[in-house]
Image (cartoon, rainbow, N blue to C red; front, side, top):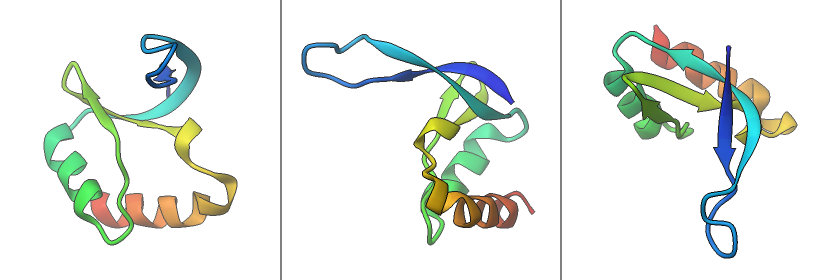
Length: 76
């Protein structure tokens, strides 16, 4: 787990961020990012300095189990 900042988006606040936390995956970041993105339940992360960050702020409570199953399957 790592502390991170989530981007709010565009519009009036294109550079505004919110504090967040995420899962950091250091090994084969690009390969794992592609597998997660292409999985049946797409998981979208970002790569920063060679590390894949999955921002937990974007995972809704009702989606947690499916997120964990997808992550487990694609990391195997």
